[in-house]
Length: 83
Image (cartoon, rainbow, N blue to C red; front, side, top):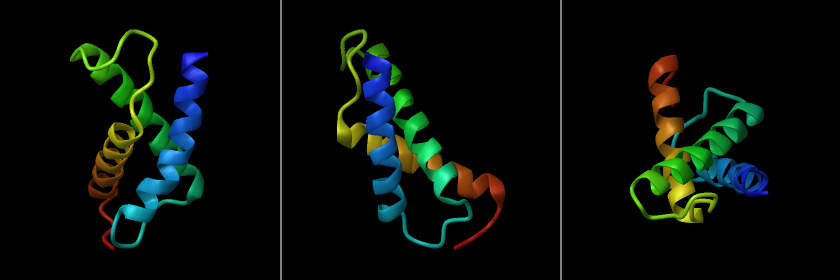
């Protein structure tokens, strides 16, 4: 059940990260939502590794948004498209 909660949070986080990131997004809606999901999962596992979260506990909303924004920034740098 924890991974489903992480995916749901990731969906919302992807939308929030797209809204907060300045500039034009080179990707579409689906890619941004997937980046949000991966950012949420990444924040959950990194937080668990650092001792911030217990095993199976999803990341906090702010940590997930920051993770998604970081991944969105990296994605924009890799694709080479500028806003």
